[in-house]
Length: 426
Ligand SMILES: *[C@@H]1O[C@H](CO)[C@@H](O)[C@H](O)[C@H]1NC(C)=O
Ligand SMILES: *[C@@H]1O[C@H](CO)[C@@H](O)[C@H](O)[C@H]1NC(C)=O
Image 1 (cartoon, helix red, strand yellow):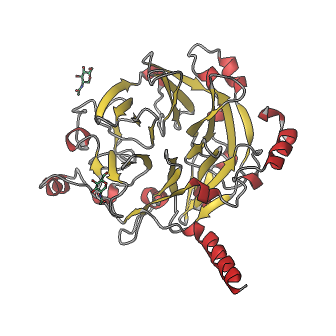
Image 2 (cartoon, helix red, strand yellow):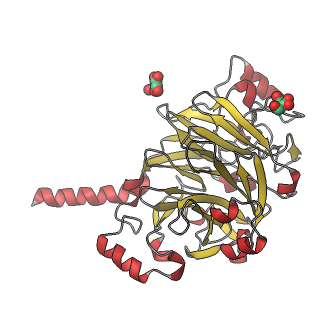
Image 3 (cartoon, rainbow, N blue to C red):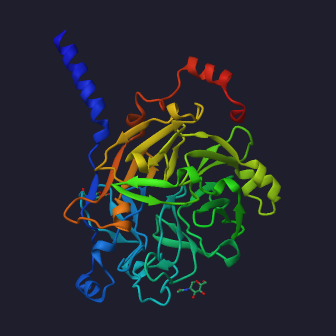
């Protein structure tokens, strides 16, 4: 009896401490694995200003964990970097693919190699061991904004650490206000060549679609890519700010409606709603505008204060995970359930460890990776570099959704949900 009680207590404690999974990596300030005396030179020249480096995106591939640093401010030596998954908690960052290719000084007139990433937010690793990066090409975004190179899509072969392609985006798919925040990739058919990349343009409320095979990109617009005026007020880390950010993150979900295509689930940052559109409408650059406008659907609302900068989808559990800015945490939604506030539980939250969750990814081993970066302090006030500011947490998806509304539906629930399924879920 006593042991049962004890194990029950332990179980309860264990479940309650889920919200406190320890950071796998954490930093007070970011530093790099410099070659010989390069660090001193970079500090002297201003090419490296430690306090101006804030990580924003992540993606895991085997033993590498990629971390991006957008050029918000001056003094970011390298935007695309990696650390080792089995390495220490406060590791130095390694520029990718190499120092020579990744280094950019704020004074640079242009890039020195086609493998150079000037400024990226979020990145994507696909099933074909390729890393997809959308480079905004700008330096000192919040200061003397400078376009070092034209925005481009870069694809790297991760096994060979080699650039497969750099596709420069034409002016006609961009606008002056364009901010390319993430990229997601759909590999269709056999092999790896027939791939499409979908890039949300948060700044000009559009989606850029790129076909690898045709080496061509086009722009898609929709009213649902715009922000919701009801969701533009934020308070994170005690700082108020107002964002009118449009579509910022997208995921691809298998479609039961159109065979051979997937559904692209999207949401603007300043919104609490979830939308969907079939890739059938996106993959054809000549698709009539009317079809694209009528083809996007609202799936539901996650409820007040549920704005998300990023999301990712786990095909095994059929669950979508969202960063939750205003709740310092992560929420999830099992796609077998209707999208309602009750069905999008907050599964982890901590106002210190998860202050400003900026990116979330699921790796091929079904682990969730979360990056938090105190971005509102970094952008609008100041950071205390004596404290830990940047953290990366990781835990198995299974464990994260256990006992929540995102867990797998029982057979009975499945049957019931099928009967009760609203029209848009056909
Ligand atoms: C990490 O794993 C690699 C092999 O992938 C190994 O060579 C290296 O020694 C490991 N490092 C640590 C710190 O365990
Ligand atoms: C990038 O690639 C293009 C096309 O192959 C080439 O013309 C150009 O010189 C390259 N740029 C750099 C900086 O290497």
